[in-house]
Length: 113
Image 1 (cartoon, rainbow, N blue to C red):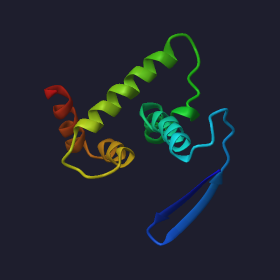
Image 2 (image 1 turned 90 degrees about the vertical axis):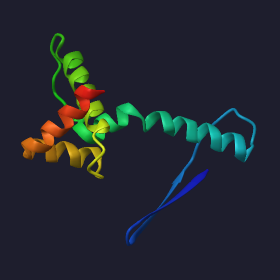
Image 3 (image 1 turned 60 degrees about the horizontal axis):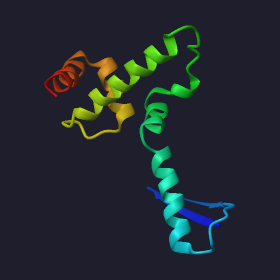
Image 4 (image 1 turned 135 degrees about the horizontal axis):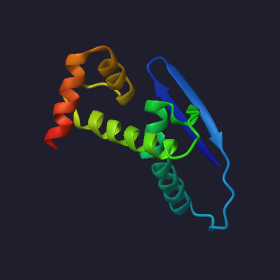
């Protein structure tokens, strides 16, 4: 059993998760395995889904899913390289969609790398 408490601004949430495992009962080992699992989940696929709503994408035919996945990864890398604006990836992406100057700033950072 893992109890997670999260504090955000004026809101606190508490969740309890149960895990089944054949590992010996050792809190240090089990905690490390659980954190390792979630670190993998929170890397690129998670940020693609959060930033681009990739799971809701309805593109299914021919090479389109692979092509769009490649374009999304390139866009995510470009937004990651722009460091002047301290916002989430999703906020940076939306700002780039509404502000051509900011879009050019992102593209310049991406081309210089």
